Length: 271
Image (cartoon, rainbow, N blue to C red; front, side, top):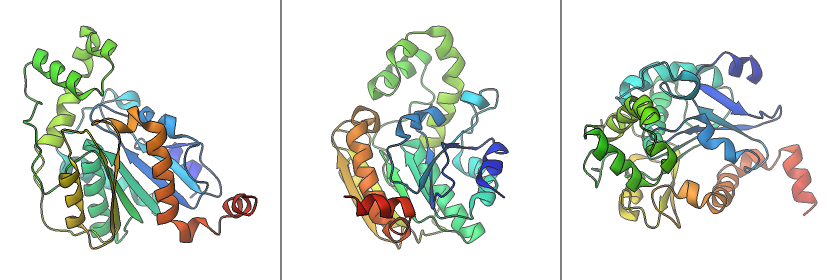
């Protein structure tokens, strides 16, 4: 089955400008409240040979009418089977904050149930899954306090936070996302075999260096940690720098696959 036909039939996966000769797929999972468009600015910023794909979770964008999941294991139960047609190429999973947790559990499920390991799991802006979050939960706060805490995170546009009608519309999804993130309980059942690359914001009060460094405990693969200037949403505030570092790390991780790629080889030869 071709990549185009798979993408057209999937409510879960959207690939930006798919390359016919792509060797690896990078699947991106969003932060709380985020969707496919959270990654649209990444188009054209990754090494040749890597297809950029984003996961469309229920409760947002084209799936606005669906209820968002408040439990990561329930989400993975219905999402993992959608990946089965996509296991014909090597993949890398990326997730920021809530997305890091979903990506981790997806990697474990693919390894356990499909005997398929991603080449690399890239986690960003979240403490290791077996560590407690440093901040108290906000998913059950009264609306005014909930919005105040969202404002402190600096990840939601101010014009949206000030729009009562829109906030009332998206709050159920936001609360479900934060519940998934904050009420997670780690189950020690499947240890990853893939490499993990972890990113953190130097000034992120929600995921400090030590807590992100503990991701090394959940895999038998290699582990690398990269810190980026900025707070919790450094992937937005320092996007250009982050994407340059990400691209270098991806090429290093996937060199054995990407180096033989005809367009990569041609570009390298012309340097």
